[in-house]
Length: 96
Image (cartoon, rainbow, N blue to C red; front, top):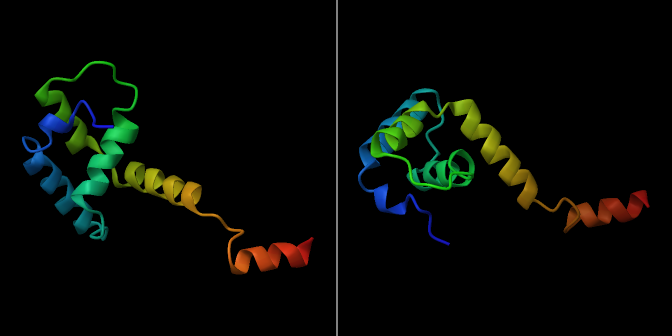
């Protein structure tokens, strides 16, 4: 499903790049533009019913904190991980 914000992505690309450079200064240089955009669409703008104005979108991009993004990424990683596959399944069976 395409986001209602997708038409603005190219327009706000300089703000996205600027935010990624800021993240890199803090040592988070593995975060991609796609990752940051997914955070904005899936977390920051998830409940928005109407499209924001361009300046509001740029403000949201520039206001993202490293901690906010890392919390989102950590929760996403934990949700997608099944600890009981492979070796984890063997350990679970030993415990049971």
